[in-house]
Image 1 (cartoon, rainbow, N blue to C red):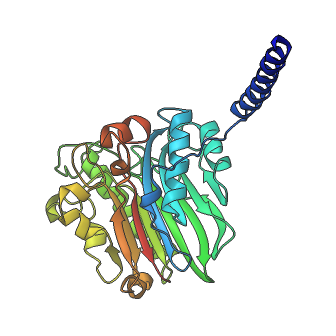
Image 2: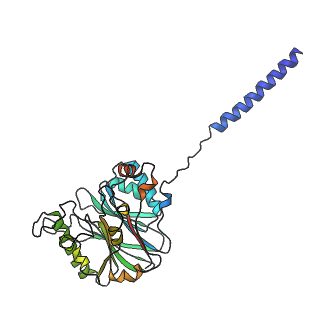
Image 3: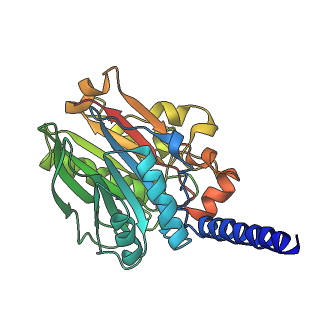
Length: 313
């Protein structure tokens, strides 16, 4: 009887050891965590439309690797063809951003000593990007353009266009002091005048999209509106985000003030496309997809939200 009990006990111990080993083996299997994109609901792009956005990334990358990761997630979620970026401070982190995006490429200007303009753009689809180049370099100081505008030349579904990326001077008192060289509003007005002249001289009859952090309001009175050169030529230009500027503050691109400072201008050859049924202009509310809202977005990404135009050429 004792031997039988011993055999039973040994059998139980063996079974326990076997199951214990099996259990340990299963617990040690590496499980790859599923990375959930917090911006998954922010999709804008489609395969049949061209999307162009402007986005100031505020001293990119303000939270280093965490910023790079969050911007990658946002770009992938929005699925926009071309994103014109401002305030790219770190070339290595910009390269990490481009390298982290599957099916995207990028170009960064390097002419400015601190913060530069850049583009992200999709590859492998209807979009074809030909060249990048800076314009209006070497203007006398004080340079009204702050930094050289960066041009992307390309085509979508065989139809050519250019995108001019800008970052106007910031700040001021809201009043244009004509003839005062360092008055920020006067500098922004001069920037609009110079760009208007350049577009007329170099891109007449072409599809032009001018974008950027232009650091001023579209809705100011004519006497103090730095965009008046464009607004005075409605047959040639249209600010597609004018309704946003005239609308609720909750839809503006710079929530901290709040104000709407990031704009998209199109030239006359795009007017008909802008009337299409699929056309969309919006500030993408990326902050609403984060747990702690705009404060978290501001800490990790930027104090500006992207503004996007979607249309069929």
